[in-house]
Image 1 (tube, rainbow, N blue to C red):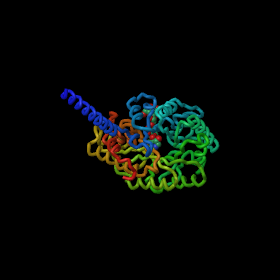
Image 2: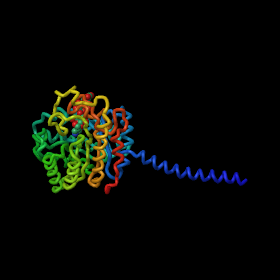
Image 3: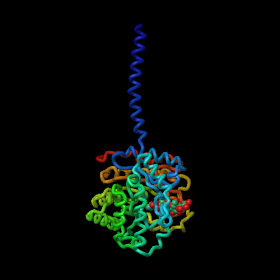
Image 4: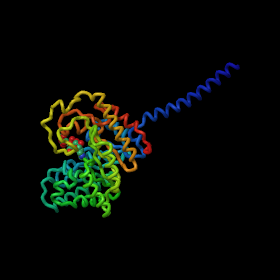
Length: 381
Ligand code: G3I
């Protein structure tokens, strides 16, 4: 009898130990299973730009990564003018509607990209030479598109890439017809169409002091005049070395000092050589003479582990800085989901093999993914 009691006692103790042990294992494995968005929850939104294949559900693996890893989305192309209003007053909303639906179903912070941009503009807009005519089309475009998604799209890239590298305004079809006040007018139109949406000015090469100063002068002017602007989008098409962490920190501090939060809207890190004097993301630059040159695409089959480690460290350092300044940052969005679909395989030189994102060509997380999840999320550390 005593023996039976002892067996029952040992069994109960074992069950208890196992229960405590299992509970601990559960919490350990839960930590190990944190996702990008859950890891940085409460600090900033974590997003990805998604292409049309993903939006339409044709790339189910990307869809599943987006749903599990991110809490914000940006359409890589589908809301740009040339797709939304390809011909005057003819709107095509199929992909855009599906995009917004995907964001709503998954409770995401949905970004609209981009309302007014000189690139990927419809052909009919490019040749207009009349202020009233172009103003009419801009107003109609913004009213139609922003109103359609009122209360659904959380933030709009209202104007994209309107500044030149020296901080002056780009001589685009908008500027040439309307003069320097067109940006302010566009922001006012967007506010009228959806007063609750976050309105963002988005651009690249913020690390260049003159360009940054030109943009932030405009932001401060808007703030002082009461023109609604809710943030600056820093595209963040960077490489393994440039810009330096100090330069990125200066961007954050300067944008914050101008009175708005910063969003890193198009983050990717190129690991490939830069053609001569090539910087930033000006898509019209052409380096076709380098196409097929193995020196410009040195890793056609696999990223060497040395470079893989450099990429992981670079991402770790960047996210460490983002955490440090998370009180000034609203969102961090990767420009794409996985390496194979990145625009950087075809820009600035066509047909290269680049490795700029956190998921590889087989949709698997890279060491850089792990290094981002290893960033301590306490801003005081
Ligand atoms: O429209 C054609 C389509 O009909 C055809 O089936 C397809 C096949 O290749 O090509 C399509 O056009 C491509 C388009 O993306 C949609 O896939 C263009 O050739 C290609 O040049 C275009 O590139 C986009 C680029 O903007 C254009 O400026 C990239 O995907 C997109 O990632 C990139 O995104 C921009 C941001 O909007 C603003 N900031 C810079 C960033 C990188 O350039």
